[in-house]
Image (cartoon, rainbow over all chains, first blue to last red; front, side, top):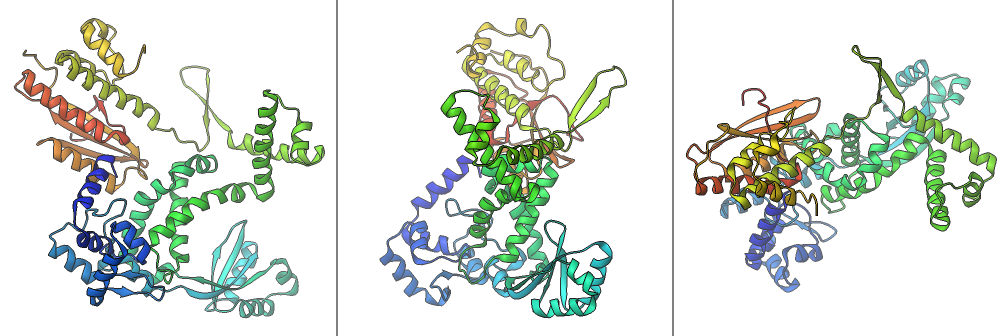
Length: 417
Length: 97
């Protein structure tokens, strides 16, 4: 949301009376406990409690003493106040999420998580097919991390027994089976299709990019291709939908925001394995500390190994693995141009960051306009605008611009300060 | 002061990844253009998950200081309010703009 728009929402919200603010907050359809509701609505506890007492018939109360309103009440209040359901009313809050003509809270309550048992195993294609056949009608099998599979069913013990009976002893032992008694999870199929489409679109394309902004530098190391980042974001959002506790009386967006702050930091473990990922982290820390102490970029490996409290042999082994990973990550394709013998290296999977050039072009565009407004030299302004984002800049451009305009344009771009 | 104009319209481009320039953002950008210019054309392209939106803005036919100043103030408003999307002038017509 743009700064100006946010500011407008804040001003409008602050200018309203207490009752309106109390109602605007609760009519976004999310759960609010008294402290949070009071804080967001910027009202006293006494005023809020009085409003709750007078409007009990409109409210839904959770076992954890949180409150919300349902779909019909949201529609009624917005219509009564002649408000646009797609506009944000409360600073930093989204408008009510009413995809599929229901509230998000109701969607999760109507699709509660179920207690399931899981077994996790490793198998080649042939053995996997055998396991699928044995567990047909009992479990759903999905690929898991580290080339393993995970079967979800009502009872982990029952699944284990079926597999032990259906497979040979050798096959069963090769599964490296790990059972987990029970986890709570919902299936995507339990969520209404029309709601899911809009919710995924919103959370993947609007919500997650902003929530992931602070960890994007870590994500881009392991997922250099933007399509991979998009796919990973979809996986994270779906995983959060499966795990979200509908009884927690908190909004799904709050839960998603919290997990998106943590899950990107699992990427190093997933891509490198825990040992190498820990080695990379500790190596960087050790080098940073040694550099701080010595003010010297060339730190002997013996010192790094000592700082990491590991033997030199162990350090060399892990460092070789680390360098192999770096080499693989930075592998280049060789493209022979038709017209020359030059080799051109391109980072595999790396996407060009489009923002670098566009940022400069945006700064030049604004500088041109501001210089134009300051000098009122419209002719020079039009001339410079026609040069931005052009394949070839006119060589004699400088002679076509007034000196005053050039000076102001340079000042706007902070050139020659 | 009257100047002859170079072209009858200006083009402002906004480019970004599909994940950063979704429907919600496009609506916000449109809102800013709607509240600033009475007339403009727009073309949206999505090429390999990179979204490009180009707005064609007609340059005022009558040219004098006051009209130009208003026109450039409006352009300044657009470029400032949408700064996070790096809006910039472009020379290239895409599609049916």
